[in-house]
Image (cartoon, rainbow, N blue to C red):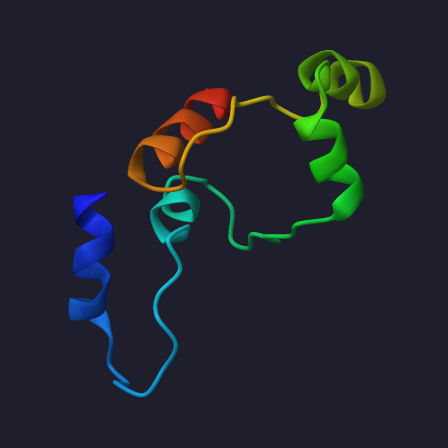
Amino acid sequence: DEMVGLFNHCIYDLDSKAPSIDTPLHAFLPFKHIDHLHPDAAIAIAASKEGEKITQELWNGQIAWVPWQKPGFDLGLQLQQTLA
């Protein structure tokens, strides 16, 4: 959470939008490009009572499950762990 407050010190264009709280989340993923989307269907599955089970059944382990938590540095580390 403390890092989010430091994002503004990295802005070159002071008229730009605020940096995304998801910036550290993406920083730990080893991909050249991240499609960060919020599709209603995926949100409905993730928010359902049996979200983890449904995710496993639909994607047969091709998508990792990380329990919800506030975006930020720790979530980025947890996502990195799913790739290990």
